[in-house]
Length: 193
Image 1 (cartoon, rainbow, N blue to C red):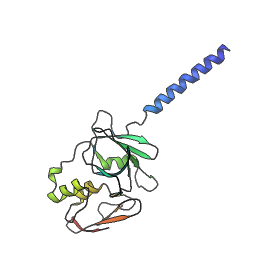
Image 2: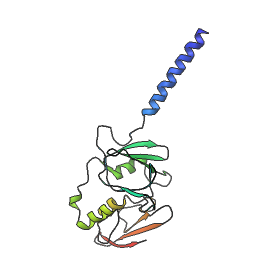
Image 3: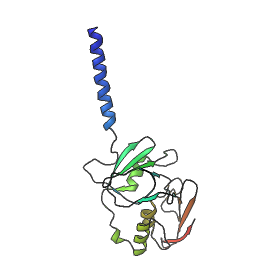
């Protein structure tokens, strides 16, 4: 009977250690806790109650509850079974970010490198038109490629495989798309909704 108790005690300790490791592993994915991390573009979310959701499809107008997490927001990245969580370090709000790796030509870590940065983006370097679009979370005629990327977010790679493309496709919501067309000068010439 004593041997059974010892085996149970060892098993219990191993289970506790394993659960403790699982609870801390992957809490923050993209950067070490002491390294700053900021959004490299706006993240368009849909808020219902206390939950905010976003998607790799980059909904730019998800409907009721549309809230933008602005570029340069200090964040931490946490693991989630259906993608990852972006946690606003200032407010504590969590954005549950859906990421379908079957439809994306890159890993979650590669994607996170595109939508986060270790240093804030100097918005004063952008034109007045770009700054307006970034603040509004919209694309306007005359905006630069970088201005659109920051305003609307990184275009969904399964719809826009290259940022060199003359047309970037964004999802407005789960059902509707919009196209942002760039002219030879690299600025927006047409928006098709």
